Length: 213
Image (tube, rainbow, N blue to C red):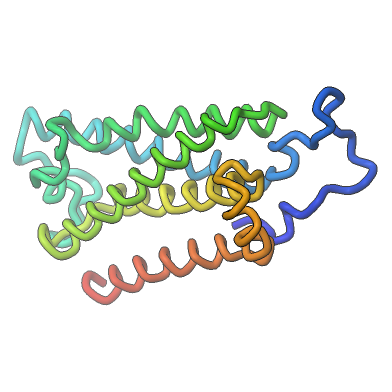
């Protein structure tokens, strides 16, 4: 997690953008974008592993993977369930599409690129859908399938972190409207997004420990 005061106003002596007179977004929100970068890289790794496993399962439904610890902690059990290919292809393929986009966004922003409002709003909407999808899959694995996939859990955690980091940037920059910026900027400065991320991840961890460990 990033320091809660990382998005406060920058120092007076900081050099503003010569044309806009505004501090580059990547500099102002460097911790948020750094967290997005690390989380997306981890999410991409998990998506690559799950995609490879999906291809293996397509060829051999009895395949066994290194993450198949038991019948309750098993990538193969989850991978064979219909929920793992909700759109007609492995869900992990979506990660192969989304994660590189977020990685590019984070690296570019850290380098001083300032993205247009429409792009940041679109990214937020897409990741909100992704967050809902990730938690729906966790619900299905936990309550319906009866088994959990460690790599899927990693993606749920990284999706949570990226969503709240992106929300922090969009709210503080006013991309989601002045109404939200006025009401949520102060809670964000106090670390409300960090607290929500920690609570959600702690709940996930507690549920996993309670049932499977």
